[in-house]
Length: 269
Ligand SMILES: Nc1ncnc2c1ncn2[C@@H]1O[C@H](COP(=O)(O)OP(=O)(O)OP(=O)(O)O)[C@@H](O)[C@H]1O
Ligand SMILES: [Mg+2]
Image 1 (cartoon, rainbow, N blue to C red):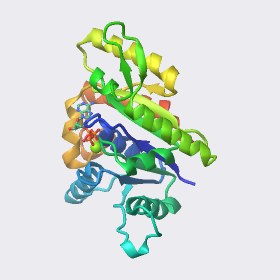
Image 2 (image 1 turned 30 degrees about the horizontal axis):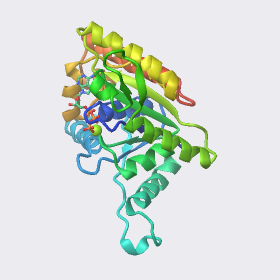
Image 3 (image 1 turned 90 degrees about the vertical axis):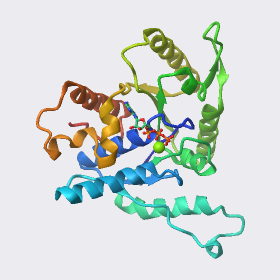
């Protein structure tokens, strides 16, 4: 059985697609077979990322390890069982296509609540949630008392994950390993940073997730997408000397993969 990694957060722009592409590509580079799906039917950022990669590599005449991306197959209404949801079926069929040839299947979710994203969460062996380092993003995980910083209770996204965990428990599958990582960490705003760290730490124990070292805010992430590249590809496209920021970013990716601790994966890059 392929190990399913879901990258989700109902907050837009938290870094889901960037993390998805980096984790998927890192795994392929380390010799694993990776299939990917994009449940953001409108933006299809992950799909675009993969298409950009193929186009860029073709134009340069180079071949680099690339995850396999497929679109959700179309399903005609007459193929559906009575009451069956068309998108659920499309997801099941996509997984059936990828499963035989994948060690890992990575599913990138949209930045809003959809039924399909919820279904995918209940299928996750590993769930990765990138979070901008801001209490606006934290608010989707839990409500916090502004005066005392006390956590008042879980909010929409955490409740959705809780529901997914319940559903999964009923099917007898092992629990979801949920990892939250802080993205776009800045060098300034020390007070906000410490408050976030403390709040996340307390919340992780309360609702059951692990915290991974995150990514700093770096221009390079925005430059990679049009060429479909990741931090790990720079040397192979002829960037001889990586600058300090790129080396540090690679290290952050490495630390993330070590923390995620996927089965059968020894992180080597
Ligand atoms: N650590 C970072 N430093 C700088 N820019 C970043 C970083 N992480 C992501 N970005 C940029 O932020 C934007 C949003 O990232 P991304 O598309 O990965 O988020 P998302 O969660 O998938 O968004 P959506 O909810 O719309 O699907 C992109 O332009 C991306 O290049
Ligand atoms: Mg996205």
